[in-house]
Structures are given as C-alpha cells and as structure tokens.
Length: 359
Image (cartoon, rainbow, N blue to C red):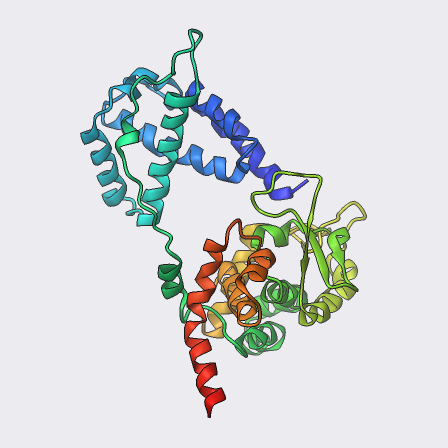
C-alpha cells in the first residue's frame, strides 16, 4: 500500500464528514478516478467556499455540513464574482492565480456532477440550475511560462554533483562551530546525500521517495519500483531507472542504515529517521525531507531550491540527452504537455551547445 495515499485516505474520510451529504456523494463518485490527495484538496476548496457563503449570509446553515442544494441554486453571477474577489484580496494572504483557478475548477466539477450526473429519486438532476457553468476557468499552467519561472532556480550541469558533495562534506565545514547542528549532520549526512542523489539521478517525487521500501530496490539493475502518482492500481509498481551516481550513494547509505538507525525488523522503509526521544528508526515524512533539502540549499547558496526543483533539475539534465517521450516516461507524466516545460528550459543550453560545435 502507498503509505502517503493511505494517510491521505484516512484524512479524507475524516474531513468529508464535515461536508454536506451531496459533497460526500460526489467524493464517493470520484474516488475510483482521483487520488485521495487530490480529493483532499477538493474538500479544502469546498470548506473555503462554504465558509464564505455562510459569512456572506448566502447560506443560513450554522455549519458547512448543512449548506443546502437550494442555496447553491440561488447563487447569482455577482456572487461568484464576489467570491473570486474574496480569493484575490482576502486579508490572510491573497491567493495566486493558479490557486484561484484550481479553487474555481473544484467548484465547477462539483456543480457539474450535481447538475449533469447525480439524480434524485425521481430521476431529476440534484441541482436544477448550475451557476458555475457560466464561469470560465482559464488554463494557468503554460509550459513556456513555467519554464521562465524556473530558469535560474534549478541546478544545472556540474551543480548537480556539487550539491550532493556539499551535503556530504561542505555543510559540515560551514556548521562546524554549531554543536547541535553538527551532531544531527554527522548522524544523517549519508542518508541526506543519498536522498538528494536519488532525486537528482532519477527524478522521483518526494511522495515516491518517502514511500520507498527496501524491497522496492533492485540495486544491481539500477531500478526502483514505485506507485506512480495518479495510478490507482495498488497491484502494480512502475520500474524507474536511476543513474550510477545514485547507486554509489545508495550503497554508502545502505551500509549504515541498520546500525545507524536501529531499524526494527518490521520496518521496511528505505529512508529512516530516529524521532526525538526514541531509539528505533521510523519512515521519514514528506515534511522532513522538504525541510532537509531547504536546509542544505540555503547554506549552498540556492535558497529557492526545493525537493521539487531537484526533480526539475534532473528532468532538464535528462531531457538534454533524451527525447520528450523518454523524459515523460521517466518522470511519470500523464501527458507530454507537462514535459514540454523542459523543452523551453533547455532552449538556451541547446543554442549554446550548437555555437560551441561550430567553433
């Protein structure tokens, strides 16, 4: 079982209880097609919307679970415009265009289901009037725009190896006077370098990293078997290749895993941590991996670097040596449209390469 998916499914089951019955029905309808993580985002979007509805007195409900279908039918276009404005200017922090687009898209999906798919006992649509059908949600994620934002914010060429080397050696020199930092560093540097190396040499997502078990590793063939994002078939794991550099870093970490982290026999996780106050190693969390990369990146002089940007770094490097279809398969993208980002990212690098050959 995918560990993160299992956690998200439990959270989803808990949070959906705070939703109206028709939202619970919609989530059940979507479960076979969408991951629990995606549906959790839907629920959070609906919480925001229903809270706003009640705050604006567009619903008489005293709790989100009591918002009615009739109240949704009575919404006018001016209400939707007001909600969009609220998302843009809310005091606790304005949402980005991408977030607003996603929140409106979540509502469109719900309203579409209620008006076009779900039926009452007389076979009539649950929602007679769909105001969200009038709302155009513009596509925000254009590959060229995404590439422009990433330029200068990923590791390139020699930096991939330099970052791994920095985790193994350089960081320790920089924090040598900090006893607390150096203790944690000496304990975890091989593990941390291995995680960074595996991402930079395979393009794995952070969720795929933390879900890895010892049994998922085919060390000799440089393969790792993972549940790919968006694939709901729990009986099949996708084989993903990693480069030889990661093989060396994995070998170093594996030689220390058992003794360094006191792994219980029942603990199958590949990457372990010892929680404060405990003796035995446990599976690392997504948040721990993200914080770990940011810690090293900041000292390395790349404070904008994140786990996902390490994946972008690998993808850009990989695309320079392979076509878009191989890159798509390696990264586990659903379509080549997502992979097009790396075509735009490598434009400058490729043009420089052509000029060098001419010389």
